[in-house]
Image (cartoon, rainbow, N blue to C red; front, side, top):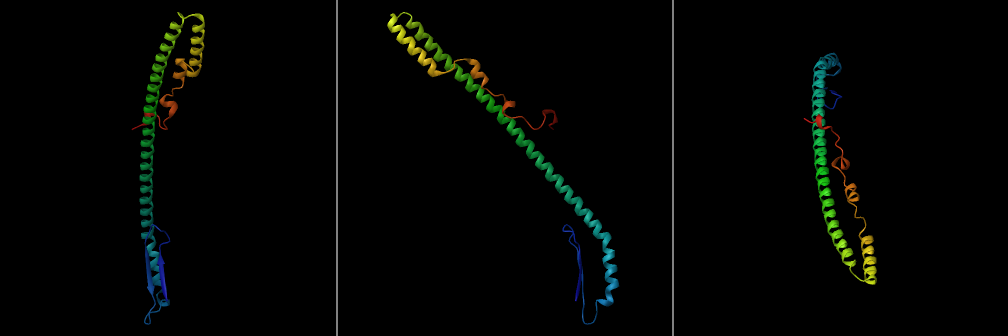
Length: 164
C-alpha cells in the first residue's frame, strides 16, 4: 500500500509519499504521516501565496502589455485617419481645380456661342447645357462638404492629455 499527499493547487508543485514495505506497515506510521502533512501546511500556504503573487504580477504585466498594444494601435489609427483626411482634402482640392478648368472651358464655349448666328448659338447652348448636366455639380461647397475631418474618420479611445 502507498499513501500520497499532494498540493491540490496547480500552481504549487508539492507531494510526498509513504510506501508500505514488508518490514514496515503504514498503520504504525499513521501518526508521523499526519504530523508530516500538518507541518507542511505553513510551507504550502507560503508557496501558494508566492504562486498567487507571481500569477498576479504576470496578469498585471500581461494587462499592461495589452493596454500598451491597444494604445499603439489607437495612435496608429489616429495617424491613419489624419493622413486619409489630408489625402481626401487634397483630392477635393484637385477635383475643384479640375472643375474650375472645365468651368473655364464651358464659359469660353458660352462666350464663343454669343457671336454665332442664333440657330448655331441655340444648338451650341443646348449642347452646353447637356454637358453641364452630364458633369454634375460644380458647387465648391458640395465638394468641401464631402470631406471628413480626422475626428470624423476616427475618434481616439484615449484623450490626448491622458497620454504618457
